[in-house]
Image 1: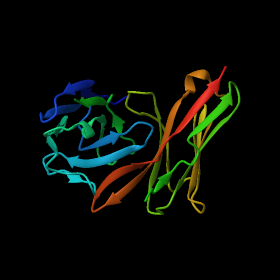
Image 2: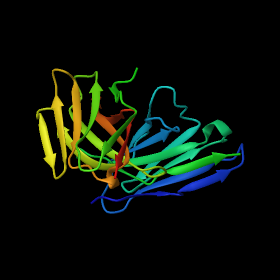
Image 3: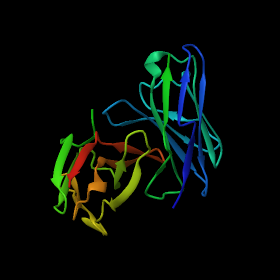
Image 4: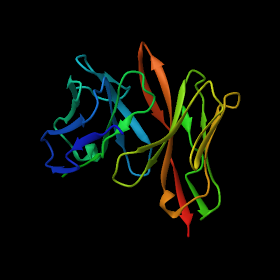
Length: 115
Length: 114
């Protein structure tokens, strides 16, 4: 099956610093990647959708200058949380799809804690 | 406004019995529906999907039923096993301006009792 690798699995950073999370599709070319955020005991909230080589489309209420998304190649997308604050602490998950294939494949998720 | 809803936050079922997880949606333009299983601190794992033009899809112990007129889908797991204990999310695919995205429900925590 298709494998999506997300790194790091968890990260602790100081308030005001920036954190980069990587999402790689290991055995397929991901034409579309999605970034989600999950709060405890809540659903996966879509933050943005990115297609390779083009700007990400952000969902309403998500600050694009705060959450920088880059999808530079068909196998790599990155999410950078800039000037992180404690309220950015959350579980971030990426997923990747190819073509119009129906299911998206998820990474393992990244637990971000901002202190 | 939550377009995909799972009204039961939790469900307990005895091992060997059937588990039925429900999902309701509001957007009749969704063209594909999926079920994912998720353990804590891990990414969701795809289970089974169904096209909006079908009303049933079966894969081993998992069967998904779609009732378009009621905008309702359900996942049946039979027989349920303790290893099925996890949070289950239903998701729907939406197309907008030539691109698609998945909208997730709020999840149902299934506990299968041995």
